[in-house]
Amino acid sequence: TTGRSAPVIDIGPGQRDLLRNCGEGCTYHLIVRAQSAASASVALSTDGGAVVLVDGSPQVGSVGPSRHTSKYSLRTSDGSLDVVATPTRGKLELTVREARGGGRAYTLAAAQEGGSVLHRQFTAVELCANCEVEIEALALRGGGVDFEECVYSLAASTAQGIVTLEDGIPWREQVGAGEYEYFRVYVQDAATDLRLILTPISGNPDLFVSHTHARPNATHHTWNGTTATGNDVVSIAHTDAAMAECARTTGGCIVYASVHGRTASTFTLSALLSVANDGLSITKPAAEARDLVFSNANFGVPLPFVGSPRPLVAVTPVDGCSPISSSLAGKLALIDR
Image 1: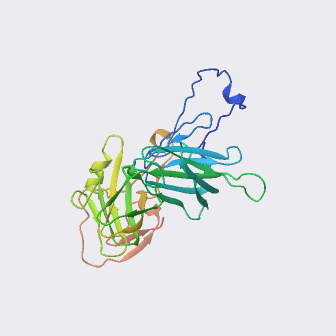
Image 2: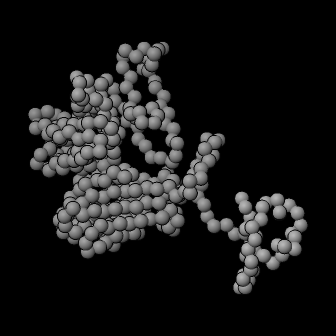
C-alpha cells in the first residue's frame, strides 16, 4: 500500500495470484518501509476474526465495497472503556458489545471525514468487567447501492491504559477532581519539535509532561503548562536538553503526559509534531534521505568592524576575476548575482 491507499491488505481465497504455491501452513512475509522515521504496529486477522487492540494505542483500518465490516476486541478491567474513531476518508459507524453475547449493543452515530469524531465513554455498569469487548466498524452506503470506502483510526482505552496520541488528532477526555488521565507520544526523529495543547471544555485541568516518568504528576515532571484559565500549551524544541536526551534513547523517544483535574473537567489534548528543517532535504540515495537542519557556522575570526561610512558601488562577478581597480578601493561592492 502506498500514498492515500488504505493501509490494509485483504487476501481472499479467490485471489489465486496471491495464493499460488501456497497450501497448508502458508507463510506470508510482511515488509514495512518508512519514508521517514516512524512508529507503527502491524495487526493480523484470519477468516474475518477480530483484531486485538492494544490498550490506548490507535489502530488504522478500512471498510468498503469488498469488506463491509471489520472487527476488533479488547479486554476490559472494571468495565469502563473509552472508544474513539477518526475517519480520514469516507463515512463510518461503530457498534460496541460484549463478545460473549447477551449484553446490549451500543451504536455510535455515523461520522465522516472532516466531521465530528466518533467518541463514547462507557461506564463500569454498561460493559462487563474483565471480559472481551467487541468493536465492529461498519461501512455505510453512498448515494447508490454500493458501500463506500472508509479509512479510519480506532483506539480504545481502559482505566489502566495510557492513551497514545496521534499527530494532529485531538483526544477528548474527562477527568475527575484530583484525578489524572495519562497519555504518551512517540517521537522518532531527533529533529522533531513537539507541542502539546490542552484545551479545557469545562473545569480547570492542568498539564504535566515528562520524558522519564510514564505517569507524570505535579511532583514528578519535566515540563508543565499550568494556568488558572485557558489553554495549557507545552512547547518542546528538539534542541531542549531533556528532549535531546530522550532522542538518544534506544528504540526511540516516548514523551509522557498527564492531565490533572483541579476540578472535574472535560478537555481535549492534541500533540503536534514538526520536524525542524529549512526546506532542504536529501532524496537520493535512499540510504541518505533526510531533512537537513540549518545551523550557525563558525568561519573563524570575524572581519573587523569599521565604524566609518563607505561609498557603495555596483559591480559584476567578472570584476572579481581581475585585479581590483583603483575605482573600487575603499568602497563596499554590491555584486550583481
